[in-house]
Image (cartoon, rainbow, N blue to C red):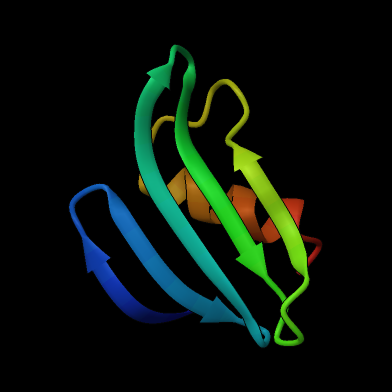
Length: 70
């Protein structure tokens, strides 16, 4: 995974040609991250809140890769 931008509560990077963007979001209890994975052609591969149990940015990255079938 290649990091493009990273800060507290935010990550943007690439993996296998797809762009992964993760933001910490506390609007919905038990859904701590909003994940967007975009294919190189612009199509969305994952767009939504992380499942319950995802507590860290590292877990959210794994979920992004798993959920987008990368």
